Amino acid sequence: MLIIAHRGLSGDYPENTILSFRKAVEFEIPMIELDITLSSDLVPVVIHDDSLDRTTSGSGLVREKEISELKSLDAGVWFHKDFIGERIPTLDEVLTLIKDSETDLNIEIKSGDYDLREIERIALSLVEKYALVDRVVFSSFDKEILVKLRKLSPKLNLAYLIENEVDSIELIKFYEDFGLSSINISKELVGTELHKKIYDLNLPVLVYTINHFEEYYELQKWNIKGIFTNYATYFQEIIS
Image 1 (tube, one colour):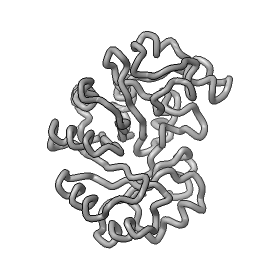
Image 2 (image 1 turned 180 degrees about the vertical axis):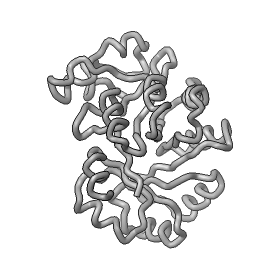
Image 3 (image 1 turned 90 degrees about the vertical axis):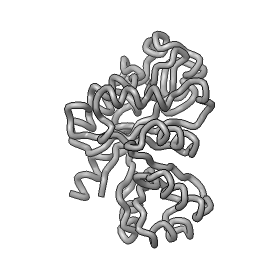
Image 4 (image 1 turned 135 degrees about the vertical axis):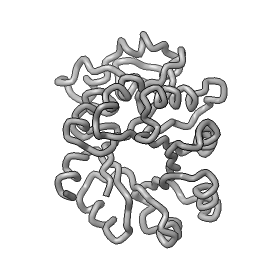
């Protein structure tokens, strides 16, 4: 089963920071998941929320700030005083970190109005710059983002994120038409009629976010391909 470090080792370090990613690489976690959005000057930055308020010393919307201002913010102190000085990473910095490692990357592009901002093209160009297309999965809750990515490249690994019940026929058609690598479902969907239909077709399924052994144990009968977890080192130890 594939263990994916959700926003890095986010149970032990501030999420979506270079420290959280570097520790995942050091522990040889097979894949890191992160979230990207764009600064106002079109730099892909790694942060989960649209707003800066929860995980940084700043406030306001990420997309309204230039990269120089975003880089001045503290992205660690909210988690613990020991992590004062951590910064919001750029996607470029993360790709630099992993390029010579054995750790792959899942890049989630958040839903939003990116029609004029071209986040898909910009992110893909960076991945291609480091020759990491084979080691990167792009994922999104937004079908249109995945459609745009597929139009940009037939080679990309794409995953569709699902939080709630959707029409199974449309889902399966989308999976087949766009050559998805996996369907990534919330743990709340495990065992539902939708999940059973996906399971019966033996489609690759990953589940988020699994942080307790009891949750992992419940997945054993479902032939799950992988899990996203905040405690990747723990699950890597108990599964190996």
